[in-house]
Length: 111
Image (cartoon, rainbow, N blue to C red; front, side):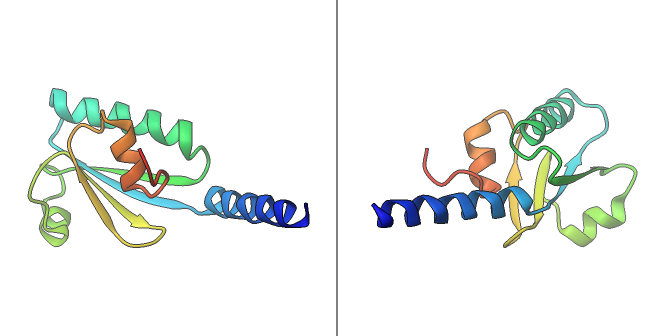
């Protein structure tokens, strides 16, 4: 029984660490296009559901900030870049596939 208690304690610690990590996200969009608007809405919903209070979301309009776009080497839009925690990850699309977005953010390992 001690092994089971130890196992559930480690799982709880892992979940607490995940909850405490701050996610730094940058979403690149093209103005108010329908695809960009969907990506913003979908991503905000995902963040509020799964990362409430543990994320920083910056929305970058490529028309208004071309230097950031060049620096980040953006090749497709909309594009989400997860800066932290962990390795940088890039996701392309309107963020409508919640499972893939969660996996890309490192919040879900198996589908």
